[in-house]
Image (cartoon, rainbow, N blue to C red; front, top):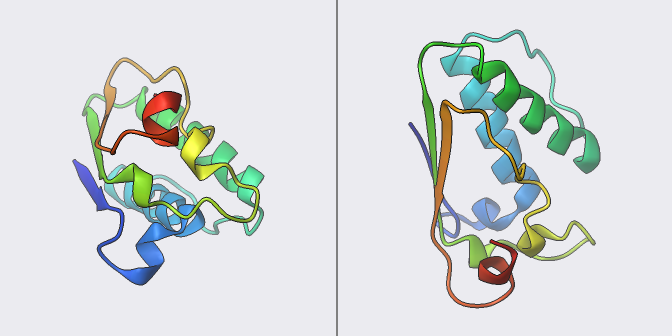
Length: 109
């Protein structure tokens, strides 16, 4: 299980920081071979999706819990509230549980 609480710290509202944390957590837990995270947001999104796909080859399931998605910064044209960074189809052994207030995030869900 990987918990992430948006708004718990100043950097936690940044989608880049959130994806970096999730990628590093998945990489460490499943002992994957990612040695460096990309600086480019689009490449980071792709890496996140790729890591989730690689988890599908593992026996151990993955649960990601993200609280308060609506508190993500929606700046820099990264569309954090549209949730494009979250794959629309997840592997069968991956679950993502989120919470958010009514608004853009909930509409995207």
